[in-house]
Length: 182
Image (cartoon, rainbow, N blue to C red; front, side):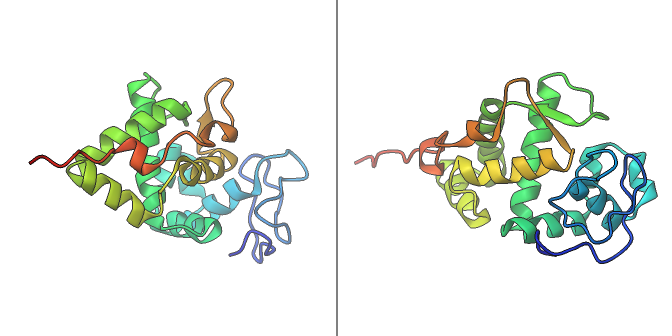
């Protein structure tokens, strides 16, 4: 589904139950202002059963990740990597695991660095791995985070905004190349 395409099936708003058919996923429910994207993701993931589960589990549904990836024009594994980093940063900040993840841009940058090293095996491998995911700079991460915030799956920290990701880092800054040793 494209962001500008109307929802072509019955999708109940997760907050008030209003039928969002005909709206695009970038709209908000006309009754309660809940993001249509959130309701759409709940609907494609299996509907009712997901309402009772922590938000982070919704991102474990492959169909949800692939839908977000298609909407954002990125790799579904990039969404998985960023959401894993968000969840870990939120846990380390002491947030309960059954609540939406809350994190700051700087905490997420630090977690991307730590998990990148652990997952890919070293600075060079992390650089290449993140490039393969299409996460070349902080703005790429910020687009994913903004979509997750819009869907209500992540809560921005107090005073945080999407502009916090502008010019924050590139993979070369985050994982500098070590000088050659002779």
